[in-house]
Length: 384
Image (cartoon, rainbow, N blue to C red; front, side, top):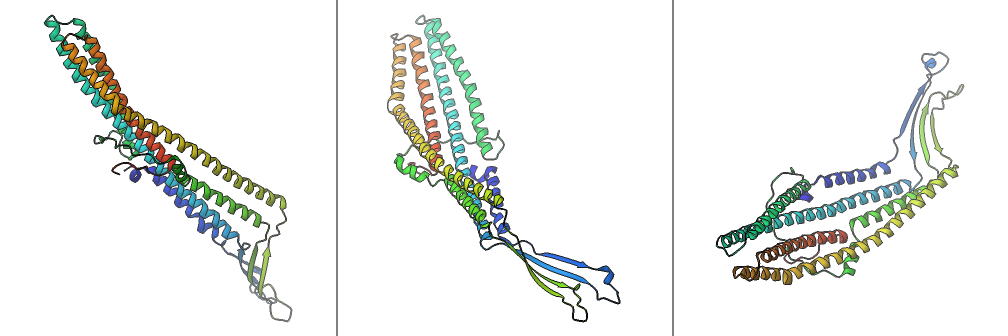
């Protein structure tokens, strides 16, 4: 929906269409010129024929110049089209990151609400034990403190959820306060491809292809600057009634040719040096971008691998241990073997670890989105 509705792509597509429309402009001939002149005093004169001149002329560039201009325009249009694809990748990353924020806010809210219910049960049990003379009033007060902390947490999570919804709606070109369905669970992470293969794929990203196209555009501009040392011509044909030879037929029809003299070498030499510098600049930009992409892919790859391992660690060890700790603390408190504060601490730790688990899941989704942006392609995911 983001790709279909976000106005950024419409803006980029319009820019690409504008760049493509440059080609017929630069490859077209200049408009022909028309000139007319007359001698008003010759009209009705008895000693001279009516004098008038009509001329049509057309400027012709040196062979190859229009083709080079067209090559540069086509390369610029190709670069603009690749910019559209690059914007598509950026929007996809932004959408997936916003979706991860939404997922985290909803999951954290669920954890906080479940914890609030459980703390209410703890308080009820502590109050009953206090009334029966088996507990302390401090246990009840401690439960009230924890419940208040959860209320504060829910207020913060409500803000995070509404901001995430607003971000997603804005990306979809919808009102920011529109409702959204609850997020689905983040899919399991598939195995990561080899980093070397990912770097190879990344070198064909749209922004790389755009820079390659811009290198071609600058090379065409350089070839055109070199060809500016060649003259252009202007051909003309005229009907001239001013030529009235004495006693003979008027010399009325004329053809001619006009050309520029490319003798301003300083100007042309400066243009050539400027074009060469721009070609060198674009080639250096391509080399820099290649190095940057290799680093981005490797960094993103390591960050994804890190979060995948953290998520697996939470699922296999941390969360089961935290749940077992709470269960044991509940049993111990019921049998007067564990203080109420220990039970609260065990529950607090369990809630904190669940929050960190969902944060890790959301961060894993964000980092995979960043890796896919760096690679320029989707990664395999089970079931996709």
